[in-house]
Amino acid sequence: MPKFNLKVVNERLVIDLDKMTEDYSESYGYDGKPSYYDIGELATAASFTEVELTQQQLDKIMAEYENGGECGWCGEIVSELSSPHLFDFAPGEKMCRNCWNHDREAYLGSVGTDIGEFKPRGSK
Image (cartoon, rainbow, N blue to C red; front, side):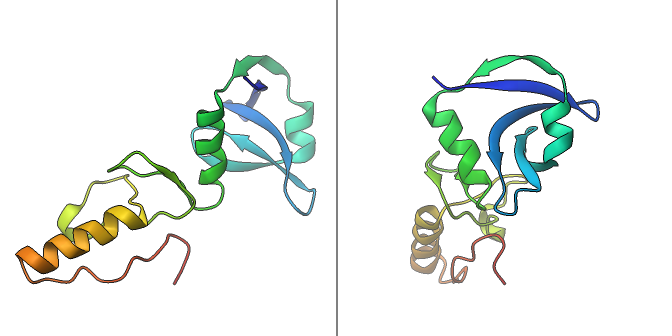
């Protein structure tokens, strides 16, 4: 299992994912949500301890950096997620395309209402 340094940055615990952004000015730091930290600030922060992440945990975290993550309905880790539709609203949860399309067919067939096309987070 990969090991990562757990650091304290601005009074927050941050997992230093040891990966820089494309412009090399920021680094991936996971603090419960996908965040970016100034590379110098993260590099100079004192290491609190080391944490081991399973490959599944690491995949889930990295997917969140690309507007993906874990679907709140089926638990699958995907690269695209949407906010839930109004008929199946759950605050803070995200829904994958497959679950959206399943609900869309179910609501069209049972109620006659179309919840619309799947719209990934970050798209207009």
